[in-house]
Amino acid sequence: MLDLNIVEKEMCPIGLAGHLLVDKWVPVIIRDIALFDRRGFNEILKNNREGISSASLASRLQYMVQLNLLHVDKTDDHAQKKLYFLTEAGIAFVPILFHLASWTAEFRDPAPDIVALTSPFHSGNDDLQEKFLSRLRAIHINKSVQPTPLWWLADKLRAGNDTH
Image (cartoon, rainbow, N blue to C red; front, side, top):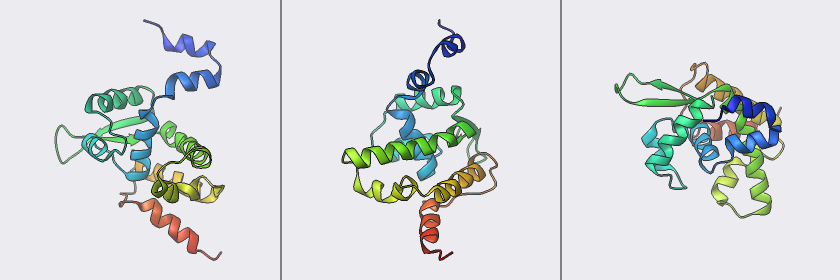
């Protein structure tokens, strides 16, 4: 078995990022957790647009915990139910997702409903994006905020209506 820590020290940062993160499911799972507040296994599995299988989801969630993109908490509701939360590394990956969304929106033809929802976050509005990341930290790291569905969309709309 190859020691990843040794390999990391020999790789260029772009090559290492590709090695660790270029997987169809990693960005999709982070999107589902960050944007749609799907933190339970079944929530992600049943509501995922791209149709991830149960086995793929289980292995990717475990891998993402090992990479320190996610951490797991048990719920009070059910002894076996786990919730997945973004770590600081996972939250720091969200702007990269927005850049990827911007690139695909410009050069490909992704789902227009999602482009419309996310475009303010990848169209140069750094203040809105920073507010979004701060809120993710409150939800996932500090656990001081319980999100409502599409909370970030309501924040985006409020920000668009601000006159100052």
